[in-house]
Amino acid sequence: MKKIVDDPRLIYKCCYLYYKDGFSQVEICDQLGISRATVSRLLKAGRERNIVRIELDNPDSVIYGELERRFESVFDLKEIVIVDELDIGNRYEHLQKVYEEAISYFSRTFQDQEYIGVSMGHTLYDLANVNIPVESIDCTFVPVVGGVGIKQLGTQNYHSNEIASSFAKKFGGSAVQFFAPAIFNNIEVMQGLMKEKPVEEVTSLFPLLHAVIMGVGSTDAAHSTLVDSGYITPDQYAHFKDMGAVGDVMLRFFDENGNGEPFKKFNDRVMAISEENLAHIDTRIAIAVGEEKAKAILGALRGKRINVLITDISCVNKMLSIMEEEKINV
Image 1 (cartoon, rainbow, N blue to C red):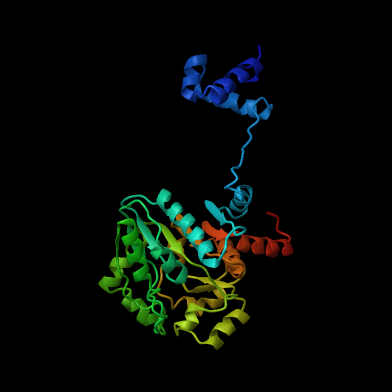
Image 2 (image 1 turned 180 degrees about the vertical axis):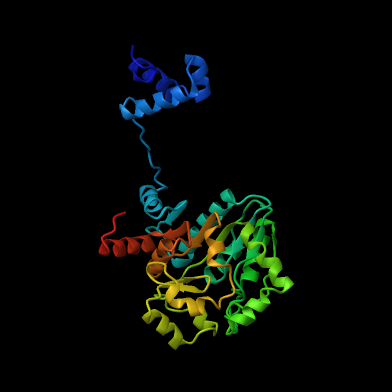
């Protein structure tokens, strides 16, 4: 007597009910008088024997759907969103599209009562203040890095406190304030400040973060926020590049493999969420565009600092070129 899961008629019947008639697996159990486990095995047999062939018709608006899935697989990402540039008239319009995709991702993944970490920098400031309407989400935005610098950066404030407040205003949530410098000359002074109640009230929220929003700094970029803000000199910055630094996340440098160890002496003086706490956050979102960010993003991906990436096709194409040189297939 043949096994139930080897019966081609039953396999076809089960698959027809599931894929054509829209029955749930529980409904098929009742219809055919078989167990849930048997239904699952019959559906699997239908796919393996090509009784069922699944095709996806990629919409015109999702032109990089397959490329996104390949990147997600290679780097074990929760999601990557690739924004096109082919029909973009200027950089402003292009960045608007990037910000729309980022806000859309936040809107569908952030939930009421969640804590969301925010870093600092130009990209996040512009994103938090972009004129894109959103539905209210009652979450709390938490700065995860101290103040950006000792110099005024133009008329805009790229401090994580300002960015957290702007995100809270946009989503109708709330924000906490992290009153601490970003980088200390003396690590013992920093460790002492971390024990003070106003700072502990913020850092105690780090293990509770559901997600964190970050920019990615690149040593290939024309300007460095760290240099512009006065925390390091141009000579120090050039020295880090000579040591192999390709970028930074939350002001901590790393090389092309995502290794921050060569820069430990500097990185340890950054007042920010620890690498250990960052690694335990479920959703680590980076927003970075342009081919000059490619090496930095690859380093951040390899170091597992991020698991959600919102970027553009010029950056992805540059990453593909680098990986091709390294004989890595995507």
